[in-house]
Structure formats: structure tokens, C-alpha cells
Amino acid sequence: MQKIIYIRTDKRNGLYDITGDVVSMIKESSVKNGIASVYVRGSTAAIMIQENWDQSVQNDVVTLLGKLVPSGIWEHDCQDNNGDAHLKAGLIGASETIPIIDHKPGLSTWQNIFLCEFDGPRERREVVVTIIADNEN
Amino acid sequence: MQKIIYIRTDKRNGLYDITGDVVSMIKESSVKNGIASVYVRGSTAAIMIQENWDQSVQNDVVTLLGKLVPSGIWEHDCQDNNGDAHLKAGLIGASETIPIIDHKPGLSTWQNIFLCEFDGPRERREVVVTIIADNEN
Amino acid sequence: MQKIIYIRTDKRNGLYDITGDVVSMIKESSVKNGIASVYVRGSTAAIMIQENWDQSVQNDVVTLLGKLVPSGIWEHDCQDNNGDAHLKAGLIGASETIPIIDHKPGLSTWQNIFLCEFDGPRERREVVVTIIADNEN
Image 1: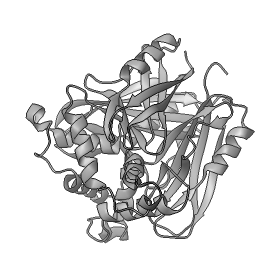
Image 2: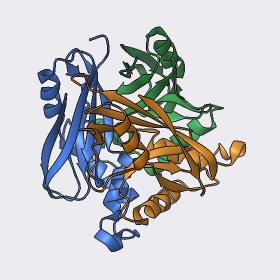
Image 3: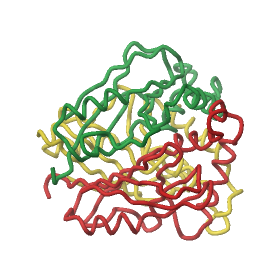
């Protein structure tokens, strides 16, 4: 089973929790155990597993990446002025693969699945979720 | 086939080699070629493929992340005082997917699979390994 | 379906676009929808999804990682003098998993698949691509 989740983003840099969409999609599929591959289409965005108790870790992720990858000093800025966004995306990575355990994502209590936006706001970010059953199902 | 590997960690920051457990599990399964998805349940830990000739690279990983992500300066520290651990986990990532080649993980000579602990010591870290055969098996 | 792609690298640090090889391999397989797991065998190299409009982002990746991970200051340098290469590889990661959508990799317009070399030049880097169909195929 494969679906695209669409997300509207409202900041240049921000994290958007997509856990609920992935939970629904796994429930809808008939897969008991396996994997869910989560992939963002776009070279200025990424997927991160992170805590969502409150906004603090999400803010800290934006702060950290802003320090590690300052804006305005990259060769690519001559094209699109978004060199920092590409570099943050490459550092965090476009995909995470999450186990499916008993019809649910095998996240721990404090893990959630986030789309990381580094070059927003965007009307429509696309995250592809592909569900694969393990072969004993 | 899906299993949880349990690891006890004894340091705040440290790498723990879990390659042997993954090798055993692949052997136990009937899968000749495919993938092994390795995922840590916990938002202050990560999975890294790295050399294990001696302790040096593991120490260097801890040193590097300590420099890139200093402790004690994050918004989340008001909650748990472990903002740095969450950020290191997000940077390295919760999952790696390793090919299975002829009943063995397709690692190179110097690649091993590590659990990265960033907020230990912990009695029990959980790493979920899911094995999927390619469809010609 | 599983294959190894071989790449010759000609710089110490550089990105090498392997998208064409992955596209060909997916076409050759009979898989309509599923995933392609891309994994580099070697603990001083990595896989990154990144833009390939021109050379600028690739150069910026090399520049950024050179700043974040300076060479010559690591414990592992006493062994091989390539501590920085291992650390860059660990930071970026050995694997990415890309969806297959309608017989093609589900990349966006500006996404390409790159091998990142951090300890070249090398005669032969090995990237393992494993294609798994989703179970409705």
C-alpha cells in the first residue's frame, strides 16, 4: 500500500507532526507486522523522528540547524538563495523507515514522525508512505 | 520476521555494537536476499553504521556530537535537561536499512551496526529489527 | 531484485550522482510500486538525496561538512588519518529508502540520489540497491 500525504507549511523553518496520518494509513492497510517507509519529495525538506511533548524540541531543532548551517554564505545562494535549506535537508535525510508492530507504528511513547520544512511556507509538501508486510503475514 | 533486541547502556553518551544480534537474526530467518530495517525506539538514541576496528571512531563520534550540540543551552532543558540528547538523535536518525546478501547483512569489512546512546545509562534500550525478503525469494 | 552498482571516485570529498543506475534497475525489475533501498558498503562514504541542477549544492555539501568535521584532530587519525571521513559518513548515513511509484523512483523534480565520497579517490565504491514490491503488486 502506498499513499501520498499532503502538508501545508506556514514557516520558512518548522517541524510538522504527521504521525496521525501514518497511524491511519497503517490501520487502513491489512498489515500486522512489517515496515512503513516515509519519504519526503523535495530537496529542501526532511523526515525526522522526534519528541512532541511540547513545542520545545521542535524549536530547538530549528535553532540548532540555524547555527550549524547559517544562511547566505553558500555557492547555491546565487541560484535560489536557499543553499542552507538544501544542506539542512541533506544532513537530516529524506527518509525514515519505521517498523509496524501489531497494526501500529512501532514508535516509543515519546517518538513522533515529523516533516521538517526548511524552505517554506509551501502550499503543498508531499510525503510518500509505503507499507510493506513482512513475509510471514 | 520481526524481533526486538534489548541493550543495557552504561554511559550518558556511547556507541554499542549490535551487529552480532542482527547477524544471528538473519541466519535464523529463511531470507537469502532482502533488507533488514533497524530502528531504535526512543527519541534520545539513534542507529549508526560505523567502523569497529577499535574504540577510536566511537569516541570520536561522541566528541564530535558534543561539540556540534553542546548541552545545557536548549529550550527543552527546562523539561528534562536532555535537549542535547534529542537533537543528537534527530541528527543521526532512528533507522538504517541494511541489505541482506546471501543470508548475511551486506556490510563491508569495516562496517558495524551501532546503537547510539545519548541519554544513558538505561536499563533497557529497544531496537526493532524487521527482515523483509525480496520478492523473488 | 538486488544489484550492486560500482562507482569510481576521483576526489577525496565529492558527490557522485547514481540516479540513472537506480532508474534503470527499477525499470528492469517488474515492480510497479514499492521501495528501493540504497546502501553504501564502506564506513567512509554515505548516501544523500540532493539537488543536481548544477554543481553548486554538491560543492556546498563538501564545504559544510569540512567546517562541521575538521580533519586531523580525531583519535582515529592515529590509525588511518581519516577520522573526519568516518564522522562525515556517520552523520549523513549509509542508507536511504526511496519509494517506487509506477515503475519509477518517486523523486521530486530536483531530487537526485548521490553517493558521498569522504575518503577517495577509490577505484571501486559499492552501492547495493534492493527493490521490494509492495504486497499488492
